[in-house]
Amino acid sequence: MERRLVARRQVWFLERYRWYLAAVGEDGSDDKKKVAILLTVAGTEAQAVFRTFTYEPAKATVGNQPAVPAETAEHFNTVVRKFTEFWVLRNNVIYERYVFHTRVQEAEIEERGLVKAERPTDWVLPLVTVEKPNGDLRLCLDPMA
Image (cartoon, rainbow, N blue to C red):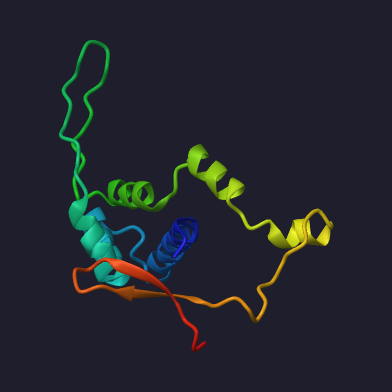
């Protein structure tokens, strides 16, 4: 499945999950319970992803910087952020350019009359790949087709 669609579905799932918590009166419950419900409802794939998450330890006060509490698997907002970071596609310019430049343009340029597509005649034989005993592939013409 395309990664963008997966990311979009994940956002929709989290929205519906928050509605569910509000509907059953659990939106005010403790974080540990909300995380447990989330993992139960999300299923085994989400649980496998959850097990891969790493959490930052607490950071002490440095100069004027306030102390940063430790991230844990029991903090609901931390778990939601980790799932969002996992699923949401970051904008990859190189990949987007690749997709743009490799799109199929044959029909468009044929309609404009820039090229004329030639179809093979009955005189052309189809190619068939045959595996050799050593594992290599051999290209053969299939006269029976």
